[in-house]
Amino acid sequence: MSLEHLPRLPQRLVEMLLQNFGAPEWLVLIAGFLVAASTVVGVFAGGFALLSLVERKTLARAQNRIGPNRAGWFGILQPVADGIKMLTKEDIVPAKAEKILHLLAPIMIVVPAILALGVIPYGREWIPVPLELGLLFFFAVGAMTEVSIFMAGWASGSKFPMLGAMRAISQMVSYELPLMICALGVVMVSGTLSLPDIVDRQGGFHLGFIPAWNLFTPWGLVAGLLFYVCSIAEANRCPFDLPEGESEIVAGHMTEYSGFKYALFFMGEYLGLFAISGLGITLFLGGWQAPLPGLDFVPTWIWFFAKLCTVIFSFLWIRATFPRVRIDQLMRFAWLCMIPMALLTLPAAAIWHFAGRGLLSWVVTVPLLLIPWVIITVIYNKRLAPTLRTYRFAE
Amino acid sequence: MIPLLILTPLILLAALGAVWKARPVHAALLLALTLALNAILYLVLGADFIGLIQFMVYVGAVAVLIVFSLLITRPGDEAEEIARRPRSLVTGLACSLPVLAVLLFMVSRFETAGSAATDARSVSIEQLGTTLFTTHAPAVMAVGVLLTAVMIGAALFAREPGKKTPTPSDS
Image 1 (cartoon, rainbow over the protein chains, first blue to last red):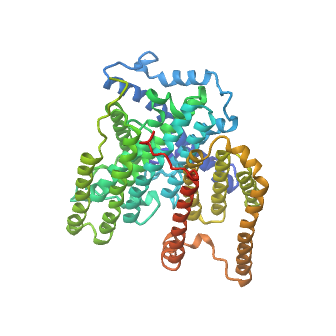
Image 2: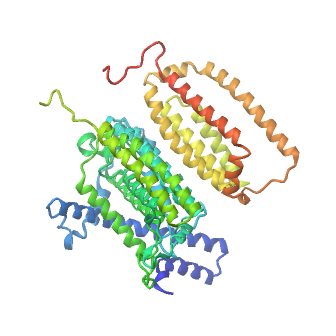
Image 3: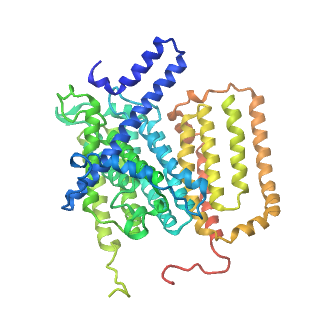
């Protein structure tokens, strides 16, 4: 058993142990799935704890601060301290809240994130649930997030959560559209909805060293970049963190939550971030494929997590760099820029699929995408860009 | 069989709740539950693609529906709604009973035709797409027209009767 199989080791061990004791087959199957699921949950719960520290450290570095440095060596125990604080805090439910929905919302935000993490292929041998319709499953459970955010906002019975929920829904619905259209291009070219198969189609190298990832095609580059922007919006992260903009509406839908429920919201958000980044890597960055030939001796899941760390770090960098956009800018950007460009990736992907990867496809698809991009940029900058606002009472 | 026996009463209960609840948000959330349970029913029956599509489209759509139900209705509407209930019951039954009759008729005809019940698992997405956009293309287009009509109808309902809708520039 090599390092490649390491993440599956707990599952194999439990299965072998149960078979040794003569357990029936269905029990072995269920126990195996349970252990596989706990591996994923364990890895990403650990990742969540680590990310909460890394994020604070990175932001501190970007803002010329030190960041958390009291708990343990370089603040390494900070997530533990945070966890203890969250668990021991008083759980407050507002008097006007709708009790059941208020309790259900934080749970319903974590569940879809974990479900979505279950279908992503992390390595050649590490695919927790190899679903045939994996991509569809991912988006289907993702649809639940909007409803649960809305439940949180509505059930709190207070105005700031309500405003945050309304913002969240309009934002997530608008950005889900280009997100799915971008993923559709990959489905068209790969001819399958199964995520492991999509990764397999991206294996190999062009000219001996350029990986055959979808990102290195004209339509894939556009779709991948759009997907990247949309995934920031879907994960409610800066600069698209309007639903919980602290300086405007306290904490949006999480305003009336405290203690462990508040922590659950954060967990759901970070797990969702891992899931959507993992999907982007699977669709455009070749999943667990190595970036250069001759690197096959490294276990494939290490490549996946290296890519994941890079993508997540870029999210942190963006958060440290960009200011929050306004709601009208956000919606205008989605409907006037993102969706037209996303729609154009579909014919480009179709040409790529039918004409092959030859010179002809490049000659046709590059202008097809480049010219509209220039036009949209020019129009947006000239006519539709938000004008400078003057405030009557603030002069 | 057992999953069906558990699921169908749940679906019925959720659907009744969706109709009965006076608060629009509760009704919409129960509608989401009904549709999600329906999706699970499809998954149990082996129609994975339809089940997941049902979940994706309808649960997401309900989120939008909730927003609109909040934008269109006012807090005072609930008492009115309850007072209107007997009349609504009659109208609702008058609308839904013919639909139920047609459905029952179709289902009974299908059963007596004795066609070999094809396993949903054996139908690939490709076949599904091909039949949808060739054999059933008129039906798909009709549904598109219907949805547009529904959208216009909703816009009409949302407008206050006999009152010009204020635009942001007026205020």
